[in-house]
Image (cartoon, rainbow, N blue to C red; front, side):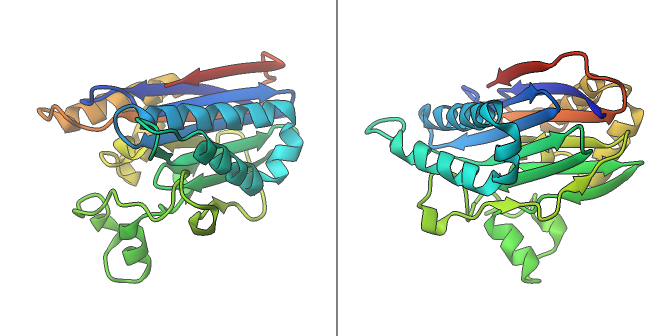
Length: 261
């Protein structure tokens, strides 16, 4: 049986309010972590992000095994719910990214899904095993060979998304894992918004991870690095992350829920 140590951070950065949200739920042998980065302005983004995280965690709390096998339909269903919650005013054009991680501690497997440019990183023994690919204009240019991967952070149109929750189903792209990933003790995951990864390249994430003795210390170090990189800017983005460390120790609780943002 696997066990997971989890920690969360969600910071306003230099913005007037935080449009990110994150959370996790543990039910029996299952863990679900979700993170969202809202857009829409004037409060619509934070409404969208909180709604999506809340609904994802609720879906898994009600039926974790079933939801894990239907990640894409679950996310697509929440997209329809989000669209249906729009109303004239602040929420009339709300959108949000989403990234979701599901771990089956009994089977030692993980699945994940995402839409937009919030990312999931999977680390093992000092190496990056996998990372989600952004649904963004710049990433599509990188995939086409027009731009280099390193250009994503500096490109003037780097924040333009080609998929996110809140768009019509016909235009929505939700990427999911194929076969479940097999986990080992010592594996680590990071879910984060672009307000994090914009300032933290892969080598920095690995260096920080190797020096940390807990998920909370890891996130504290990442927060310090982001704050140092954004000085003296006063308008940098919200930044939010969820860290998950996998071990073989028995879990301490049968079920718990936490949400921030």
